[in-house]
Amino acid sequence: MNEEQQLTKREKRERRQREKEADQRTGRRDKFVLKIRNYSVVFVVIALIGYGLYLLIQDSEAKGKDFSHAVPLMGVNHIAVGSQLPEYTSDPPTSGPHYDQTARSGFREETISDQNLIHNLEHGDVWIAYHPRLADKIKEELKQFSAAKVIITPRATNETDMALAAWGRLDAFNIENNTLPVERIKDFIKRYTNKGPEKVPGASGGI
Image (cartoon, rainbow, N blue to C red):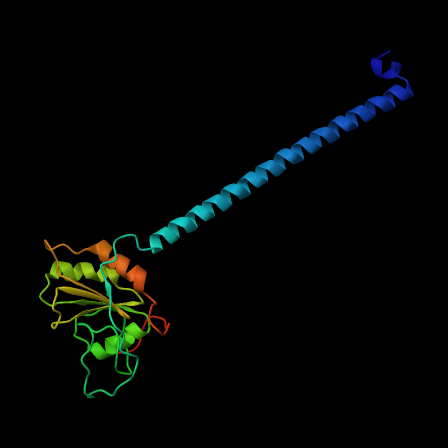
């Protein structure tokens, strides 16, 4: 007679109960482990997303010295093409009377009127005005800054090799050792894009 046959009904019932409780404990333990594992995965995903956002914010913030200075504002009046122009408070101007039409953003090889570009600044664009005398190497490097809210144009009346202009801000400087100050330009763009009195998407139309 085997062990199973020797057990009384009560003993069999008790053994089944113990086995059931053991299975329940194992099931609870497995569920707990699975829950911990799922929470760990969620935590890691949230941490990675948070770190990614942190890097994105860090990359979008200006980190270097601000070489620009504030320029007294001259208003936002529109004038007709051919109107008598005022004496602006900076060269190139960063505010003041301007034409109705804006200029298309991006790198441009043709000269564009200051009065059109002031309108871009009013919309929060950044204007990089480079002197045509600059080496082709520098002009080619400037193309990396082409963006929806950045316009890059030649300007023969610049007093310096380059001028970075935004609404009411100006950073004018000469190029040293034939080397473009990339970080200086990046920082200016990060600091002063969308700082104009009108928040308008980058100009795809215009002249």
